[in-house]
Length: 359
Image (cartoon, rainbow, N blue to C red; front, side, top):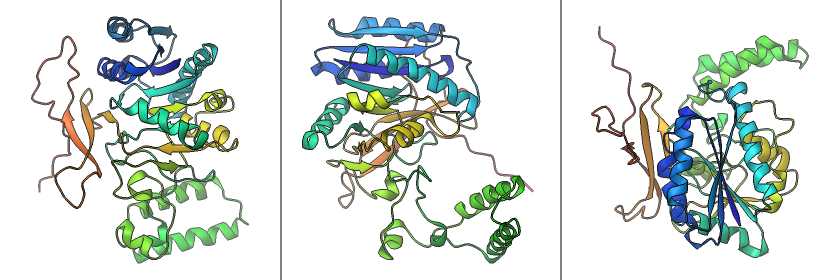
């Protein structure tokens, strides 16, 4: 039996109907699946539950666990992250209670391909269980890089380009030198001001242009890199690769990984999935894979226009003969074919851009 876990509050329920259709397509070969929904008691969540009841195969079922979860908190801040961890805890508790053979975690706005579950299961079987966690990549919330790549405990996601691979202007180099000199005066014990300056300088360096593309940088000596496009450049169809980190957006866990997927000690700093990856799975020597052979779509928010969503449709290149099979993203207007949807000109599938200043 497979447990499918999804957590959502009202403001994150904009893709649940489309996601339900995707899940039903994925579980057609499963003898039994239990969909575990965790959310608030909003009409949107109740609508999703009823839709599952209408489309799930007879041998499968849906369960809804509701609670008082504050909605609309700032993304990636401690308060919001703790709510996500609490919701996931309830979902994973129920999966363990059901003694599920596998647990498939999905973010509420990630849409898997019909073969996603099948290939993730196959990779958990690879080499008699070499991997404990299988994932299908999806575009980030910003609509950019696919999730998956390399990291270390001290830096959960390594940079795509390192500081010494960037064109840093002389004035910024001076500031960095002065900043490091001040640390010596502090006898190696950074104060709050030094830490704040460190964050500002690091951000400025990350905005500097790389000295070349990832192939050029690797020609000087291979280095582990953080996100999919840098860690495994121009990869795609037919591929499965190891990953040091993953999100919980489309993640299949075996029983051992599920048993360790617990959040006690998590204070909301960083994301809850990376907490489990590094504080639980890494310490237990569990391995993670990522499968660019089956990329997921991701429905993201337009950061400039409240209430507007964009479908980041993932696919493999088919036209350019030199790039056939490489991962690609096409932005599309978001319609999930649910009751009440109407055509709108503003729903154009494009990010809202700042207007150019005049004068």
